[in-house]
Image (cartoon, rainbow, N blue to C red; front, side, top):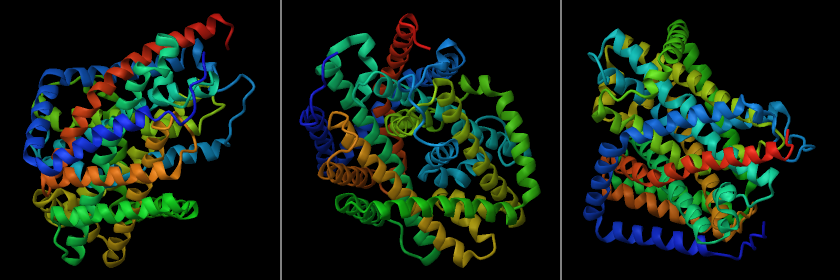
Length: 501
């Protein structure tokens, strides 16, 4: 095993940034043509390979739990005598924090209500449609996303902390290609990881900026146009890029603390005033339905038109986020066993997400009924306003609405700042403390890239463009993750043969 060289090797940086820059230029000067190409690619992948997204995630689920409960589960992510860097409480807290993001805030009301109005099976706007809607939301935000993240996180943590390889996705393929991870094959894998991360994060930034813009419109009447959304992105990009350049770590920690405390505050507030008993009933019923239908829902293909816009999009989105979130959960899990890692990463954040969605979704259904359909009317008009329409039915709206904007901004800045760090690391040979200039470069690139996609799509349609691009970008990385599973299994088998615990 040879040395990987220093972070001065800029091959991944130059190639990935050049191609992404070309994409941005293409979108600026030929936006319609880019939209046509993206839509044709989307149609091809979802029509001909939608089954592969579902089957792959099912395989990832079986694989990760199979490894966790096998004889390999006691292997440490580190040397045999390494101890965890963080206490259990600190570790759990960080994993919970990793489960909170822009997407969870954006879809917490909108998605349950949209499934309620237009379910993939049966009649909409019925009690059964509400149960189906909540079960689907649990499915999309439950265990499956964190299984995907756990695959990538396990690979990064195992090969970095136990084998001493660079903190790069390509390192996971050492058992298959050996020192060629430092050559063109390894660089290609890391470039695809950069693409997946950029496209996945762009989707989240697009969702967050759209919700901020429509929130400003909903509260203060500021017109939410593609230009307004682009200005929001530009301002947010300036904030987190300046923080990165100037090293304002305390400022970023402050933003993270705001996100956590506001998230908890909103959950408690909505739980208390949104219909406590209905929320608890909803959570209990949905949790049972979720586990009862776990296998069937995982492989269900009864409505492909619906699946393309929802489940296939989500699985592609999570796959695109795998290098990003995988890096985070890996970094905080040194010294844990594989079994501890898998169970904590897949169950704790998903459990938090289910509680979050039960509170928001249950309250939305309750308040919608009490207001004679005010929330579903808002969703029909513009689903990005769903969160604010729900808050409007609760006390203290003049206070909670601006706080909601702050929560979304804090989630936006936190995700973007973390993504710039991961992208800088991926393009500096796995340097775990990448250069600040490189981080700022990727911050600007993410902002520019997302703005282009927003302008190409225009208004709410921009979110569809972002979804389309995510699915296209995630496809090659899905294939990489399948190969990654085999590589992990092969490495663990060799470790067992060499006497590893």
